[in-house]
Length: 335
Ligand SMILES: Nc1nc2c(ncn2[C@@H]2O[C@H](COP(=O)(O)OP(=O)(O)OP(=O)(O)O)[C@@H](O)[C@H]2O)c(=O)[nH]1
Image (cartoon, rainbow, N blue to C red):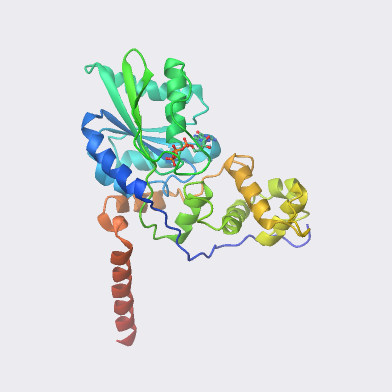
C-alpha cells in the first residue's frame, strides 16, 4: 500500500426510501384485532440494525401486551454488540425479555420454545404472534420453531426479498406438550422513515425491496461501513484489489472483473456486480457487522424517543415541523 488509507468520516445521503404498500397497513390492523387471543407477542428485529429495525408503531399496537423481543439474524451481526443492546433494553423496557437468535441454531429455537412453554402454567395452551419489520426472518423463525418443536417441515413461505408474507396466516402448532401455537404476520415497515441513512441501513439489510433503493448506493454505503471498521482485507483479496478504496466505482469494477459480469456490449456490468456484493454481504460472507450506533448515549436517546409520538409523525406533519423550525432559525439569525 502506498499512502496510508483514510476512510471517509461521513456518508452523505439525502434521499429517503419509503415503502409502505397496502398489505402492511392492513397487516397492522389485523394484528391489532387478533391481539386478544394472543398470550405473547414475539417482536422480531434484525440484530444487524438493532435500532433501525424498531418500528414504533408496534409500541402503540402491541405495547401493552406481554412481549418478547427477538433479535434475529444474530449470526450476521457483531456478537460484541449484544451486551450494550440488552443493557439498554433492560433499562427502557425492564419487563420485556430479549433473545438473540439465528434461525439456523437449534439451541436458540429451543430457548425460545422453553420461554413460551414456561407460560403454559396455569394456561393449557400458549398462543404466540410473531410481528416485525419486513425480512427480519419471521416466517423462517416459525418454520425453524416448528422443525425443532414438532419435527415438521415448512409451514410458511420465506424469501430473500421483503414482503413475502402478505397476510396474517392461520395458526401453526410449534410444540406439543404444552401446546404452543404461532401466528405469522406480514412484515410492517414504518410509513415514513425520516432519516435517509437509516432507510439505507434497512434497505441494505434487505428490509426494503432492492429495486426501490439504488443498489450501487447500498454498496457505496456498505463500503463506507467496512472502511470505517478497517475491514478492507476481505474485499481487497476477494476482488483482487491492491489497495482499499473510498470510491465505489473502483470496487464495483474490480468485482465485475472478478465475477465476469459483462453487458452484451462487452462493458463491465456494475449492476450485476452490485447485486453480487449485496448477496455476499447478506449471506455473512463479508463478515459480521452491526450497522447502528450502539453507544450507550445513542441507544438511550433512541429508546427514549420511541416512547414519544414524535417518531410516528406523517410526512406532512414532519414537513410542517421542519418549516416551523426553519422559520424560528431565520428569526433567530435576524435578531
Ligand atoms: N443468516 C440468517 N438468515 C436468516 C435468518 N432468518 C431468516 N433468514 C433469511 O432472511 C430472509 C428473510 O426471511 P423471511 O423468514 O422470509 O422473513 P420475514 O420476516 O418473514 O419477511 P416478510 O415476508 O417480509 O415479512 C430469508 O432469505 C431467510 O433465509 C437467520 O437467523 N440468519
